[in-house]
Length: 422
Image 1 (cartoon, rainbow, N blue to C red):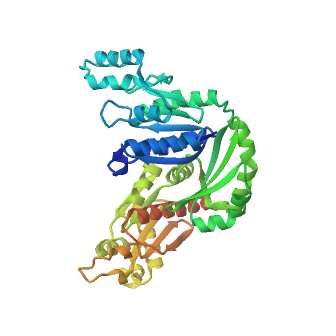
Image 2 (image 1 turned 90 degrees about the vertical axis):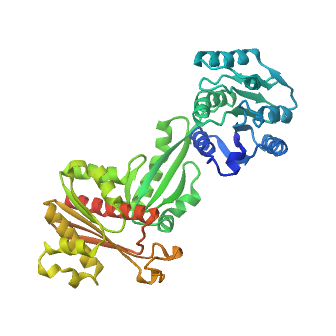
Image 3 (image 1 turned 180 degrees about the horizontal axis):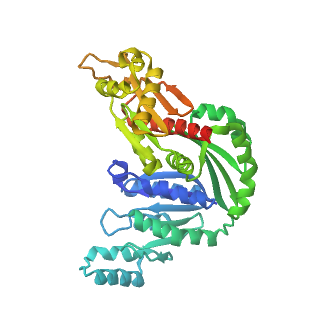
C-alpha cells in the first residue's frame, strides 16, 4: 500500500511556516511499514490544488492532506476534494452540533463562517476533532482513499495516531510494521563508513542498511519489516553483528543513546572526575561535558586569549611556557590538558585548542571571508594518569557545525581514554 502526503497552504510555499507536519507524518508512516513515495506542498489556489490532489489519487492508494479545512475563505480543501471525487458538499448536522457545543463549552460566540467546517463531501466519513473546531473526514474513492487532516500540528498528530493509523490498519489489513536499530559512529566520516559497509547497503533487502551523516557522527540504520519487535530483532541481529565487526570501536552508541550520555555513564561507573580547557568553540564542549558528567565535572576554563593560556601553562613549570609551545599545537594542547587536570585535582584533563588558518584574514581588521570560515586546525588532548592522548582535525570555525564536530570528537576521545583506563 502506497501513501502520498499533500500539505496545503500558501504560507508553506512562502516560507512563513516550515512544513514539519509532513516530516512527522512520514516518520509515522514508515513506522507502520507504509510506503511513502511522494510529498507535495501546494498553495491555496483552487486549480493547482485540484491538479495536485487528482494526480495524487491516480498514483497512490492513500492521499493524506493537511491544512485547508478551517473556517476561512482560503480553506478550500473540502471543496477541492469534493470536486476531485465528483461529489457535492453537504452539511453534516452532527458535525455542526459538535462545533457549536465546543464554542459553548469555551464560552465563545460562534461566528457564521464556522458553519463551513460542518460541510463535507457527500458520502464522506466524518472524524471528530477533539482538539479543535475543524473536523477531519475520509473519502473512499475507487482510485484512492483521501484522509483530510487539519494543519494545526497538535490537532493533526492526535488524529493521525488515533484515527488515521487505526483506519489504515483495518482498511488495508496491515500486519507488518517497520522496526529499526541505529548504530552511532564517531571519528570516521560518511564515505569511510560507506567504504566498510557499502556492500551490505547494496545487497540487503529485509532488513536494509542505510547511512546518514551528522556533524561529527554517522548513523548506520538497520531496518526490518516484521509483524512484531521480536521478529524484527531476529532479522536485524545477524546484520547488526556484521556491522559491528566491520566498524568496531567506532560505534559508540545505539538507538536513543547519545555521546554525552555514554561518556557520563563511563565516568560515573568508574568514579572519574574531569576538567576542561576549551578555546574558540564558546563552551559547547564544556556544556555537553557538564551534562554528561554532572558532579564529576570538576572545572571548566573557556577562552582563547593568550593571557589565559599563559596562566594555565605556568602551573606546569618553565618547560611548558607559551612562548616555547605556541608553534606546536599538539604539544601546547597536551600541556593545557595537564594544566587543567592539575589545577582542578581531576582524574582527567581535556583540552580543546583551535587555530584558525592565518590565510583567512581578509584585511578588514582580521575578519574572515565567509567562504573561508572553518579553515584551520583543532587540537584535542586528554591527560590522565597514564599520559596524554591527542588528535588533530583540519577545521577550526566558530560556526555551529564545527562546534558540534569539536564537541563530538572531544567526547569521543574522552570515551576512548576512559575505556582504556578500565
